[in-house]
Image 1: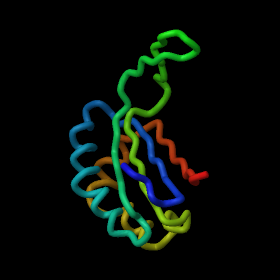
Image 2 (image 1 turned 45 degrees about the horizontal axis):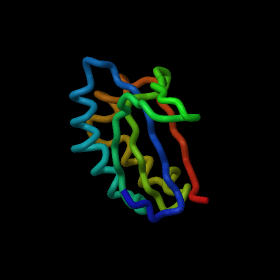
Image 3 (image 1 turned 90 degrees about the vertical axis):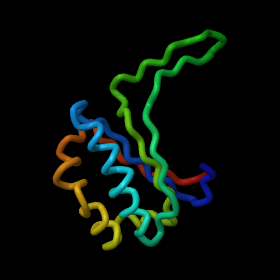
Length: 116
C-alpha cells in the first residue's frame, strides 16, 4: 500500500470468535465498498495482527500485545472532514454492518494520523 494522502484513519477492533466469518465477509463485500464511494476516501486496506518476533536492543524478543485489537482497517482519506461528512455518516450505516456485525465488535479503537 503506497500512501499518497496526508491522512490515514485507522479503525481497529476485535470480533466475537463465532462471528468472524460474518465480520470478514461483510467488511470485504459491503462495508469497504460502501465507504470507498464516499468522496475523499482514496483507499482501504485490511490486516489481521499476527505473532511478532523481532530483534530489539540486540536481543530476539517475542512481542506480546494481547490487549491490542486483532483486526485493523487503514483508510486513506484526503481530509479529516471526510469522517464527519454526511456521505460518511450514511455509508457507515448501510448494509449488514450496523445490525449484524457492529454489535459483535469489541475493543474498538479509532485513530486519525497525519503524515509528517
